[in-house]
Amino acid sequence: MQLILILPLIVALVAFFMPNKLVKEFSLAFSGSFFLLSLYVLFKYDPLNYYNFIYYNETFLVGTGGSLHIGLDSIGVMMFALTNFVIFYVNIMAWEKTYTRSFYGCVFLMQFALIGVFASLNAILFYFFWELALLPIYYIVYKWGNGKELNKTFVRFFIYTFVGSLFILAAFILFAVETKSGSFEITEMAKNSLTGKTQILYTIFLLIGFGVKIPIFPLHSWQPSTYRKAPAEGTVLLSGIMLKMGLFGLLRWLVPFQDDALPIIQKVVIILAIIGTVYGAIIALRRNDLKLIAAFSSLSHVGLITAGIFAYKFVGFQGVAFQMLVHGINIVGILYIFDIIERSTGTRYLSDLGGISSKSPLFSALTLIIIIGTIAVTPLTNGFPGEFLLLMSVFLYNPILGILAGSTIILGAAYLLRVYQRAFMGEVSEHVSNFKAVSAFDLTALGFIALLVLVLGIYPQFILDISANGSQYLTNLLELKNN
Image (cartoon, rainbow, N blue to C red; front, side, top):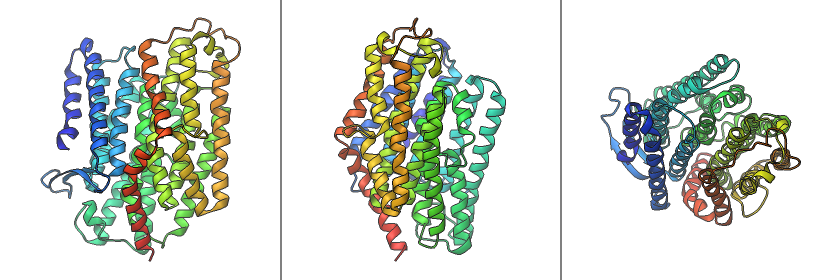
């Protein structure tokens, strides 16, 4: 596992110093090969063992309580595969653009840090990789972002994420001090528990820290402008995989330490998450900018995932694991489609679009498949199983909240089908009249995502089998604490 972790760091260093004329081909070849490796790791994962591919070195970060203790649990192994899928597609999207070697170096440095986040079994090591993952995306947004008030957007993004990270560190330190364990190992931390005000503080600190990254309503105000002004590849990184850091953090470092002493916090978080789900869908329905539609769509989808986490049900944890993976796949597809539209027409505003289907029928067909998967209302598409399990978990927690959360299916269908109707159907608009043909390269890449939409919808059991052990572990742990 340590070799898999370190390889993207080596490639990042190579990319930083490689000639610009060679770095694009090198990066695409490596990212594609590493994605195939991650699929091999996913298929080799043994669901009967909670942690796989474990490596431990206690001398790493010596003196801080940190150690190089890494391994992949059932959700971690899926996030490992998703990370490499996203990095591969970032390189695909960058193929026809003129990014320099520093861009590719930052992308692979992020890959290294993200794998570290999902594999860390030590709290300090987790925090180290968490902070490291933020540095490259800061640079990507600032260097290649565009639009008015970019500096203001960057500063807001930096302040939110930096302050959120400090809350995470404060929570870990609080846990170590109060339990007097002196260890930041997840296995040792799990043997201890917090009580009273200390547990409330620990929970609130992590909710703020991880909630900013997800983001949970109302900690989302940095998101729309950052998604809008970041380059397309930066938006893919933020939405496709980086928000999963926050969701994963809740599952790894917060849920196992909860008990029935905090029902009010559980209820507040679920209500806020559902508010964010409905709010994001309504705002997406009214936006004209495709990137803003993607931003608020993400806010809506991750709100439901967050509610599923805090429902504390086995079906909810199953839905969370499945939907984290599926959302990453689908939002990459949606953002890739929007990027192709902008490259081919020179605009990403719905009011300027229309009639794309008459210019590129195959592109339109693939887009429709991916949109239907994202809506999550149609059986045999990848969005349906996870969404169904999440809604079931919220309904079991509170039927009224479950019904309210279910309304987002209708809203999601409304705003995504609105995009398809306005951009692809009807008369050919002025901007679309000179629509540049979608390359075979782009169509093949989109075709693979469309294939995943269908395969994971027809046969979701493979993913559910992988996540079952981890979901049952969290369920049993919560039941044990509550009895």
